[in-house]
Every structure is written in structure tokens, then in C-alpha cells.
Image 1 (cartoon, rainbow, N blue to C red):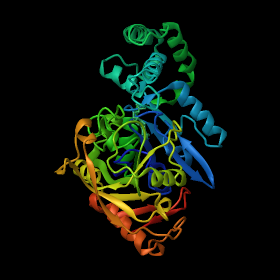
Image 2 (tube, rainbow, N blue to C red):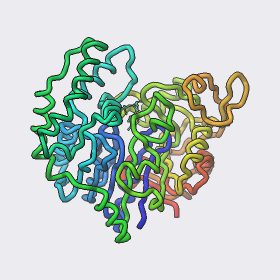
Image 3 (cartoon, rainbow, N blue to C red):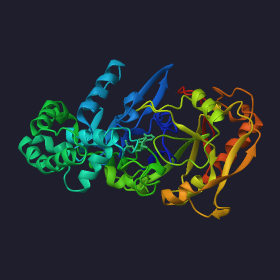
Image 4 (cartoon, protein in one colour):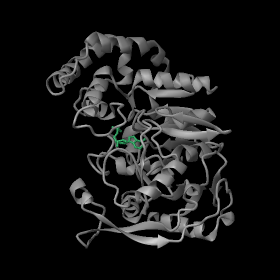
Length: 425
Ligand code: IMP
């Protein structure tokens, strides 16, 4: 009855899709589920030299697995169906037999989008992916959400949107001085997608739990990341969902105690998009080299990512919250020739050690990094598939980066391609 979870404990973009894609080869895998976030994610795979990016749809569709979008997700209907069309054009089959959208998932509607756009173009912008993720989750917490399953009754939807729409319009008009959204516009969108959505809707809880009861494997594909969790990340520079293994329960009704493999995927260095201090940020010139070589630009927004050295305090904090059973380190090929390499080993404020990763932005902003130097390597490691073929310095660097996670390093990504992966037993 095992769940295999693949998640990024750091800041996202670690290369989870590549690991999900690899694990998806295993014949025991019966389904792939996403349980949080929305199309703010960008999961890229390179299959036979071609890049395939998914945003809201689980990566499992690429291998034709039963794929589930859990109730913890937020669903923007025009964008989800545009993504389905894009994938179909790449010959990826998506039918209601392959994809289930939970009837309990929360809909992102035009007034959420209008509010997000207004905030993200104001002086108070948060640097989000502009997908109205926080607006959708926020109103849901306010009991003003609309569930995907609600679309079967349009009169009910019209009733449900009345209050959130008037709240949104009051804010649009009085706070942001922006045009308001009309009820008919919202209903027109719901009506447009209603018939195409209905066949995909279902209750994921019995589906997934029955598969687990039959001893099949369910792959749980995390989105965003631990340090972007709305409660455990660096608030307010977070996303709006919970992202850690425990959130699986609320997100799709699977007991997290069914997780048998919990694979944390981290890059060989750190990247961060959006706002917020990165204590171990690389000097600009080195960061630029890594960014260009690693193509560190947001899959969803195209924004350049900020680049930092591997960071022990973040690693230890993440391991305290949820110790993974396995670690995958990706993109080690990108660091070839960066010599020496640094590891951020601890933080200080005014020379005093900071014992645990800070909770508040104020404290974090005051932190300075303490660094340990490692020699780096010059050999090209792209496409290496055997651990023993890595240079000694690369092996030592990887084991050092893995140290705070306290679990075996089982996979190393040596390039974007499906086959550019070292798997250690
Ligand atoms: P939102 O999730 O679009 O509201 O964005 C909130 C913050 O999370 C911003 O800093 C985004 O850049 C970041 N973020 C959201 N999704 C991802 C992701 O999949 N990878 C990396 N960062 C993300």
C-alpha cells in the first residue's frame, strides 16, 4: 500500500518532474496525483530531446498513467483546458480515463484573476506567478470558494459567486481603482467549460485509496516546495498552499502514513524566484554563469531565478520538519568549472550564530552566511549514468550537499534528458 512521494523541500524548480517521470517507468505505479497548488507550477521533462512542460496537469500523463488532480488543487478552467490541448498536440492522450479532476478542487474565476492582476501591477506586488493562487485559496478559506463539482448546478454557482464577486469588486474599485468584473462574465466562463469539465470530475479519495489497498503504487507529485509553504516557508514570500508530506491528506484524502518512499529533490545549488532574501546568494558573475548554463528562468513566468550556494541551515530545517527517506540531487552538470564551490554552513546576525532557520523576514534579512570552500571540478559530467564515473571531487561535493538531509543519496541528475540520471541502489 505504498505511496511514493516526490517533493522539493527548498524553493521549487528542483527537477521533480524528471524524477516522477523516471519512477513512472516502474510497473507497480498505478496513478500519479498532484494534491496542491495550481498552474503556478512548471514541471519540465525532456523526452527524446523534446521539452515537455506541464503546469497544472500531473506529469504522469506523459507516460499515460492514471493522473489525478486532487481537491487541494486550484483549477483555472481556461488554462487547464488550454494545457490539455497543448499536450494533445504533442500526441499525449488525455481523456477522462486518464485524467481525473477532483470535484472538490477549487476554481480560480475571473474575479480572482482581476484581483491578482491588480495587486501584481500595484506597489504592493508580491512577485507571484500571476495565476491568482492566493486569491483562490484565500477566498476558499473565507468560505467563498466554488468547487469544480459545483458546476453541475449553474444556479448554485450563480448563488455562490455573488458574495465573493461583490467583495472582489469593492476591492478592485476602491483599493486598486480598476474595472470591476461582471457576474455574467464569470458565469459565461463557467458555462463555456461546464460540459467539457463534467466528464473529468470524480472523487479521488476512493479511487486512490482503493489502488493503495490493492498494493498498487500511487506517485504523489509535489508542486512548489517546502520553503514556499504558506505556514512553514518564509512568509509572506511563499505560495498559498501547504506543500509538505502531511498536506497529502487534506489535498487528496490519502493518509500520509502510507508514504513509504519520500524522495526529496534538490538542485546541486539553490535557486529562488520572486522576492525574498537568499542568504547564500552567489556573487553576481558566478550566479550569471550558473543561471545561463542551468537555464534558470521560470518555466511559468520566464523570470530569471536568483542563484545561491547549497545551504545547510535550510537543509537542516527541512529535515527537522520532514526527514526524507531518499535524496535526489539534480543539475550537478551545471556546476562544472565553478571553482571553488562554497557551501553555506550557518547564518549569523551581528556575529552571533543563528541556531535555527529564522521564521520572520526581518530576522532572515539580517542574516549573513558562513561558508565552507570545496574545490569543485573541471570535467564535463553531462550524461554520466554511473556514480563511479563521476570525478572524486564531484562525488565529495554531492555527499556534502546531501549531509543535512540525513538519508541516502539515491539519484543524481546529470542533464535534462530522461536518461541523464545516476541511480544508486
Ligand atoms: P504564487 O504561488 O503564484 O502565488 O507565487 C508566490 C511565490 O511562490 C512567488 O515567489 C512565486 O515565484 C513562487 N512560486 C510559485 N510556484 C512556484 C513554483 O512552482 N516554483 C518556484 N516558485 C514558485
